[in-house]
Image (cartoon, rainbow over all chains, first blue to last red; front, side):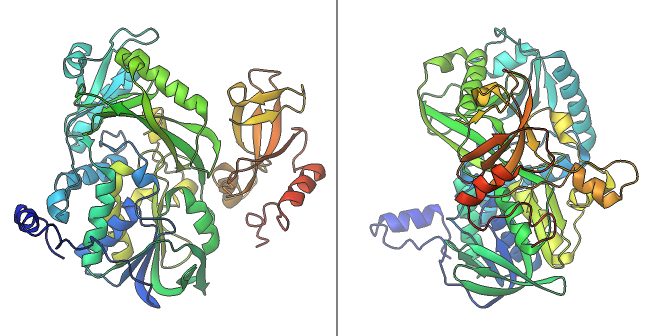
Length: 414
Length: 113
């Protein structure tokens, strides 16, 4: 792999940019791999990357039915934060956030990580108590967050309306080291690094069956033929239930649509991410100037990557009352992704009833921010059979009653 | 936009008039059941890419609970039926079978596959 650098740009500028290589290879699948990762989204690619980087396992195939990063990795609102209440969540999300800080250097690929700060607005008395509690918990966990006053919120976000028609802004939970990153670049950067280590990224190849013998996995059937492997990692977000059924086990999971949209590009007006969870909308401004807006999930199962129209209306209504200037903006695009939601709204990173078959799913509405941490932990779990970061996220926690109850802690999407 | 006909008042209700109630026909387990049965009842969910049965409430209408059969892949609605049944009615199963030949209900969860 030729490294990207200022010298490479200068060199290519002198020869009409004819020397750039493709960022990753697109090979035909081999008959056998040590590890097959199903799903070339951020989590799948990150898992493959850390398998190679941390454990030297490079005979890896990453199989993707669509195109690389074309699922939820390319559909989220790119928010990165780790201000969680429960210790296991804070640990893995903070691991992810800290890996984002050095990701561009690590991958030699600019993922445009921008630690611009994230504010979660408190708009009811309950939220004040909840967020203060989270701020205290975060101090114990070593996650840097603080409770800030409404005046400070206004100082950081001048376009905000503190005295909304329904809910006033009573303060906020501020994580200064949170922010955003370019989501496609995260997938592309990992893909380039994986390909460089000799891993095969096989796109437009759908898994049609998981082969098991005596309770252990031996390979997958795909639209490009059968592939044998010693270990499988299933990292397919909304389609996790479909895949687990192929392997012969069920998941405590439902797939629902979550929507987002962007406005026309405007001049810089907000250099921080703001989440308003009571009225339910969140917004940040991309480097292109578009306001990136996200809202809530639908209430019913869905695999169509389309959501309900009334949710768009609710989200826009929430934002218009929080940021009155939004009412003059035209929306450019709107889309949906299928998120996998578990019983306690926390992810599953776990061994499964099938031996040598591992699953990483259930990130629900909070998958992007966790990509590097999730990949790091999943790689450790797959390589060594044990990872301290994933211990609490086992599939058995529902049976044992050891929930990681962020849905109660966060109230809404997290 | 999702539109379901309420089997009680006959109104063609759109989504904002309805409240989703999750998977239908869950078998309830209580005291005396095994841990596995209770676990499956509480947490395991059918999450099919295709035909799915759900509970809905006509919340901003007659207020009654009913069942609906939908396809999660096409958003097609096969029909709605009464809440006073613990399994899908034969009528709705026939309607689905006509449109999805070879389909059977809960073949995986019940260990038929």
